[in-house]
Image 1 (cartoon, one colour):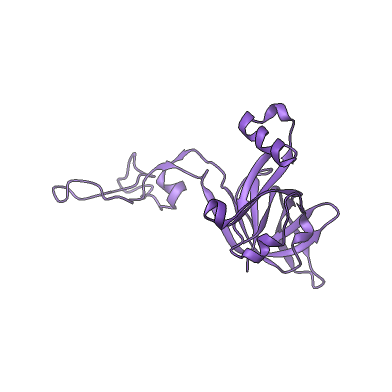
Image 2 (image 1 turned 90 degrees about the horizontal axis):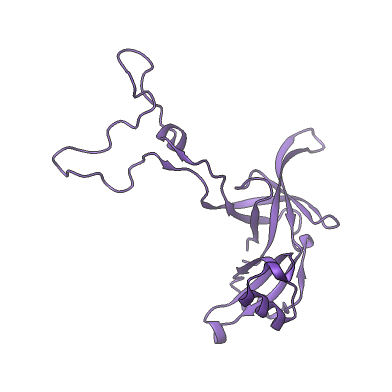
Length: 210
């Protein structure tokens, strides 16, 4: 799926002509530049490299800076690959082309990928939604404990995948089938129905679904 790089601005709500409220996420979509093309003959797969957010050359590692210089491209903070899955799409795009918010149309379905909010080391109640124990009737110290996590002599170990306390959030998450509610090409903004992962100003990858 071909897509675009952007940043999550935040959430708001809009009303239709009947007064129905719809929660939406505002995303700054692009502008992105096509920095390179990966082909089956040269790289073993087909993809487009997109750059997002210009930065000074001194803030780029030397190998990346040399690569940008060879391609005659500005230096970018973010460089991501998209695999359209269609050779014709790659052939129709040239290095140096810009992809902006008008790449999307009203009512398009998109998939949005980002890192979810990191919540640190949390217990089973917050991490997995456990109910916890009784708040009275003899319970003490273990109100929010996990309870039993395994058997005794057999098998004398804890099985993999048991829900326990641990790192919560800060994971790569993709939300699919989100609907484009509005496109503001002048400001480079798109409004997506519902929530997308990540905090404000977090990097998001928006891919148009086939």
